[in-house]
Image (cartoon, rainbow, N blue to C red):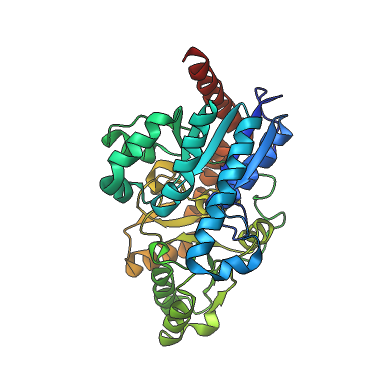
Length: 368
């Protein structure tokens, strides 16, 4: 990645969050941030919230395994907090908030260490409507709340909580356009988990409609999850089995290669914050068709850097795909604008913002 501004040298950071596998968005961001901070001179103590069960057989005992994992997690937190100048906690909605973020905030308070809560959940609105009082109580014990998008900043503001924006980071050395031109085809790609909120079913239904006009169109779905069997069944029912490849969960290098072989990236999700898959597609020079939900319109503009369609609308998604396939000038314009937009999310651009947040958190501790 590009060289980052200084500001991290010698800083001891306890970074709390999940790691691949599985290679989900927050896990990838945690791993990437740890690598970048170390490369910038920071001393990073990583506390993995999804660590393997030890001993392994505990993972087969439903109730006991949760207790064992929590004890190990608390021990690792306590140790990391004692070695760190601050804790940076990657936080999400639901049980993840209660099991990992809240304990990290409390351990940091007990150890007298400032804590940055980096909330990243796309379902924040629903979660805060239900649990805003508890979240507010927990955040009062924290030092600083940061979020990756203006969308989440506004969600928290509506619930009386102030947040600062520190965007996601996209690796432009890994995600970049294909080096050589190739014949234009109709290879569509989705890189989202096979879960209801990501609505891969809409992408499959859209493909079926696209193939009525473009029989050469095909779709690759890169992800895994509980809807695997259901989505394969839908593809068969629509007669699209031969046109769809379920690639499973891919690592970041394989996803980058997939984007370089694709023509259009799809994001059919019904809930979203700042999807890394969209940023990576932009950085790869792909025109993007996405649902107009959550934080997506905060990072792309309809008709300029992407085409946005309503959620759960296969017809609208198919129409947008055909519009790009039939109008290469539009597709190329979106590609160029997307490449320019991706520059906003490089480490060189984001590092200075993050370093400022760290300095504020440390100053707040010192003044207290």
